[in-house]
Length: 239
Image (tube, rainbow, N blue to C red; front, side, top):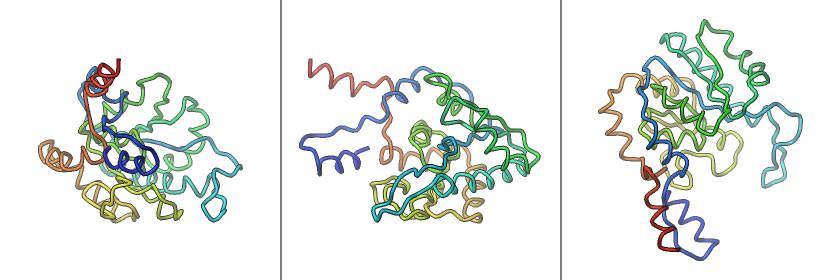
């Protein structure tokens, strides 16, 4: 988006043009399948469990797997309970190809509920986009795929608490934009009551009501350019 371009220009001389996601722009133009209101997709950014340090904060404090992904499992727990009560099907859009290892961690959360759920592995270039396309509602903690789903018009909820919980920058909704801490479809410090408020609101919004909300923020967080015409025109000018 434009705010990322402005941030880069602080360190790199040049001009910037926001074009969105090349892959998402291409996929959007090829596939427009019918979504199911009964299907909720949770975008998982959870990686395989490890005892190794994931990264160091600016002050040198180490961050481990359990601490980093705590928000993801908490939101997933809330979501599973919500789906059970609303009689929704749940698909975990996995960040990797290995569903066997993923199952171990997810089962601890999901098997507490009487829930129809499965994991969709990312086993092809466009598998994640195909999974998102089927959803009536998309939930994520924060991910590029979440922004892409929102850009394409999907009802998308963002529960972006990792930045506040770990006291690190760059994890709030719309960063580096200066956005409010919460809105009709996002919350930077999620609590269960706020989670339920957002989910129930999105669940009852009509397509037209959601479109009126989505269009206000779409270009701010991720532009959409079907067929990548902007990028193609830039290449033509260069060659």
